[in-house]
Length: 326
Image 1 (cartoon, helix red, strand yellow):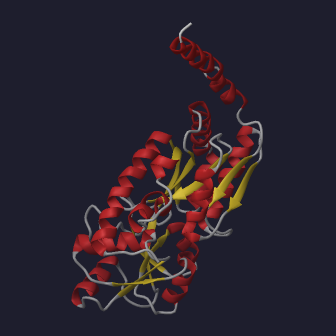
Image 2 (cartoon, helix red, strand yellow; image 1 turned 60 degrees about the vertical axis):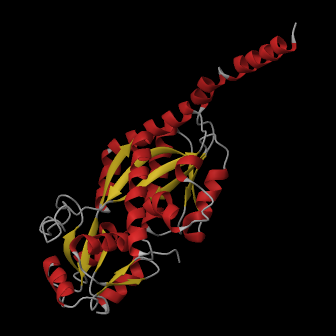
Image 3 (spheres, helix red, strand yellow; image 1 turned 45 degrees about the horizontal axis):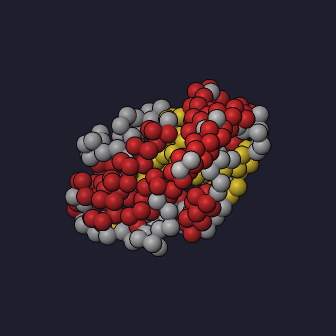
């Protein structure tokens, strides 16, 4: 027997031993607890979403789903940990647009590439952004805010949850679209920005609907526009940004689930199916809606396209506005 034929025989034998394993892996999965990495500290919106997903996923698969808060580096430490985890489906990570799409433009030395180092599993949910202002000071409407900004370029300010946050990026996008000049003041999270806005030291800001709702309901903040295509069922009397002076403007925040690259397809398919089923559960949908979010449960393919499109969209904003990483 030639060396070539002997080598070919070895390769075929190896393939025959490996190929039947994929269905077995899927059939046995999951046989132990799953780790869901949350890139941010306990108590915030991302942590709340992670714990709701863990609860519902655990109930469906009959295994514990343990939320691990890996903080630091603006979420990058968590992404690195997830990327280096075994590609077996037992480690997944919850991400939003910043970690999955924006960081590629902000950080030239980023240690991960979202679509190279991860396998997209599911587009879990989207969430609305609402523009809020002080209840007793102008602007009283979003059209007022635009008019004030045009009348005195550079005189108004706006807050955000931080540099390159969704609120920051979308306001810079809006500035470019309608031709206004307002100054950005970043904070470490929405809570700090809300306090400044309530104290009269900010002229307005975009915020997550879930984060702003308690303050809107208590009368401490005034909602003057939502950044969705249609009005929110939670704020039916509040116009959209598009209605109020920026035609076609729409920005959604979002959450997705990633797994390390090269997780076997049958395992990804199982996870994809479970997250899709969770998104259809009335209890989960109600829990999301109460926090200003819409359950989606989109496929891994849908999340892949979403990440790609968002990467291009926000790269243009980052470059045009000259946004730098902190």
